Length: 165
Image (cartoon, rainbow, N blue to C red; front, top):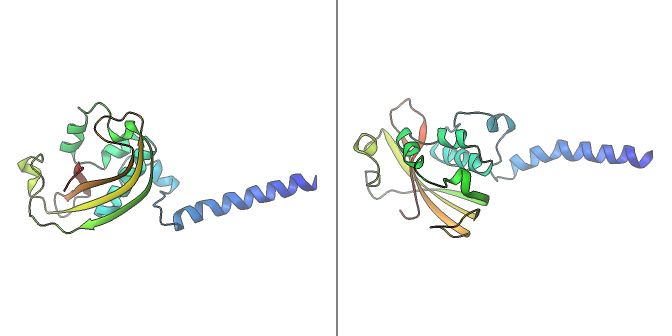
């Protein structure tokens, strides 16, 4: 009986400490309420990228797509294995806002989105394992992510993800 009570106490303590330590680790763990949302929660460009990869890790297609501009989501609808379906694991996510040396988005972004109210590039480094490897390889990866704010009051959204700046 004494061991049973001790085991329950240890379990309860572990469960109460784990969520707090996961958020404090800086690993970008999302809260449980954010994981149930269907709207990308991001007050900044980096927050949107973190929310996107959080949804990708959970294979939450609806939340991942909500972090994208409508045009980019439409482009990815034609992809056989988008990130939220093809990434098996993703860890050690590190984000860095890059200094842009140009004032337009990449060539694959249409003119309506090419000159938004604000945009930036976020460099994401992580270790990834794909279910199917076609054009990318498993292991350490860098992605260059263009994040836009179409109008002053609009939210930040991902307009393009590439493997080079």
